[in-house]
Image (cartoon, rainbow over all chains, first blue to last red; front, side, top):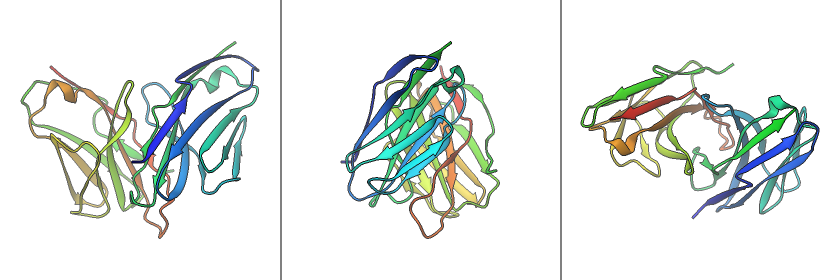
Amino acid sequence: EDQVTQSPEALRLQEGESSSLNCSYTVSGLRGLFWYRQDPGKGPEFLFTLYSAGEEKEKERLKATLTKKESFLHITAPKPEDSATYLCAVQAGNSGYALNFGKGTSLLVTP
Amino acid sequence: DVKVTQSSRYLVKRTGEKVFLECVQDMDHENMFWYRQDPGLGLRLIYFSYDVKMKEKGDIPEGYSVSREKKERFSLILESASTNQTSMYLCASSPWGGSYNSPLHFGNGTRLTVT
């Protein structure tokens, strides 16, 4: 059975304090790994897709990386506006177009 | 930009009522999805559809049905609402492009409370 596990569940950072969020996965035939950001009361907003081990994607203070077993979302010098829940999801070869989500990491960045 | 619109942000219904949650997307996407999101459980797939009049069960279809009569509209139906269906419901869509690797675009959700 496909599994997606995110850690930590919650993370509190001071503004400017860099850190990483982890997403470990076990799937049959990974088609893609996705990162989303979700603000309170809103739907998830797409950030990145990673397709193969070794791939990296960047957007502003965020950088996503992928290995054969896990993905990291690195946050460099975060700002309070980066506070949100970050969701990781995988698309497996036997799941069609649906995504299987982890439970998310709730990030709080304080000034 | 893709827009996925869910007709209600908040709904309060009574146990046993038939409930309709509506979702419309404006980008001519073939695929549409219904998820529910609960604290500690994350997003779980209820139903999805690859085309008009087609539907597939997700991980937790019990107590739900869906309807897709038009390409842009995907409805989730709670046949007889129960308190354990109190949740945030999220609709999403994605294009079919010959590739499986298409990100989902989400609406802002409907928070349903069943009393």
